[in-house]
Length: 202
Ligand code: 5GP
Ligand code: MG
Ligand code: MG
Image (cartoon, rainbow, N blue to C red; front, side):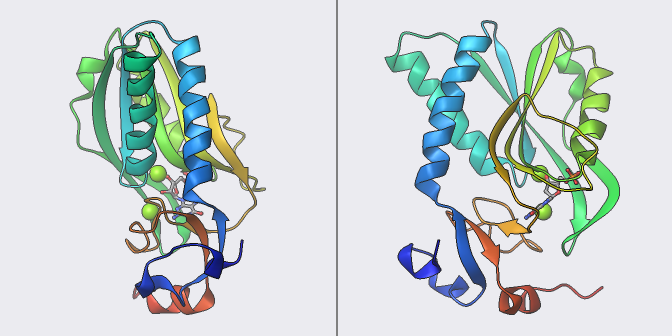
């Protein structure tokens, strides 16, 4: 969608080409996926947020599940956990991921849903799932807001996917380019100006 048809922060006006997925559409999709999750899973669930990019989708998804628990007579008890992984420098995947931030031994015997922002090559989630499976969870499911159609995919298919997107670098809704653009509500395509402005020294 043309950028001027949506509310975007003034400071990013020149840094974006277009809006790929407006915030309202993301929320509608998450509302439906929350219903699917509550249908599928009947046991207390550990929802594991992969920071930082997964923060916004995690928070909105959990809110929709909470609404189902309070207003729709559903009951899916949640506990919330957070980890960090880092795999990108500028917009290139390094092929290595770091996992930081949580005592994973409390996942033993639990039903776990990992919430990610985007699956590109699939390497991060494969690595993370291998590490988590070593903890002996009862079940391990994966959720990704976005799934990129790319020839570099390792074939990893999350259990829940918000949107399949073309092979472009996207920002917004907590997805970053060198830590910028997390403070943007919509998922957008960065412009050459933005790419240059927020480029990191190699
Ligand atoms: P993968 O290991 O699947 O190649 O990459 C997953 C991680 O790379 C994501 O969690 C995200 O942090 C980052 N990533 C991959 N594609 C994009 C993109 O288009 N935009 C942004 N901002 N990050 C991306
Ligand atoms: Mg991520
Ligand atoms: Mg990032």
